[in-house]
Image 1 (cartoon, rainbow, N blue to C red):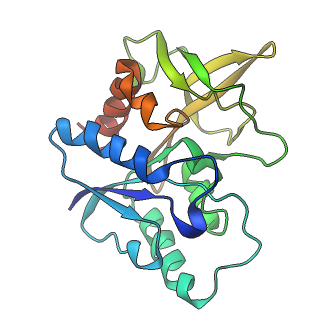
Image 2: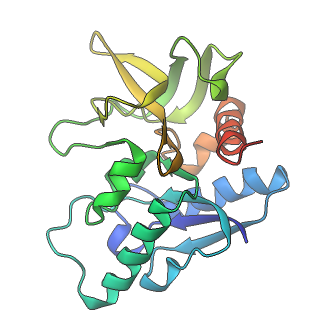
Length: 218
């Protein structure tokens, strides 16, 4: 099956992100690298991931006080199983604020967006710096420049994650990409990629490809 990209729709959409558009941008970058990629909307029948080599989550939706009812129970159970069996996972941008109704998601990702605390400066030209010592994903890189993106800030990260990138805002350094290489398999969170135009920048595309290569063990 190759790579499955879950694109936020319905319950896992939000007013600020074009998840179908950015998911196709992600898929386009990966297909040029030779990967087979399937983009699926986040509907209840999308979570049968048997046979997939990598799960990419590009969705949002924020906090949910309800469970979604019976139509979502099987989907959430399937996702929880996938997250427990070692399939590598890449969470992109607003994935830090999705599947809040699936506790296993943020446990596997290693961090989250905290409503009322996390934020980002105004979208635009963005600089991201490699956190030293560099993880193999970013070895040989120092600074990434993206012409049009958001710099997620004040994210909550678990103590065992390995930072990949950070940026300066308001006198502080903010980690916005990291690795969680835990008992349930490899996971990467990549806070870049607000809009499809982010993927026009070579540095953004290179980071995505490096993350996927590492997740797949290449």
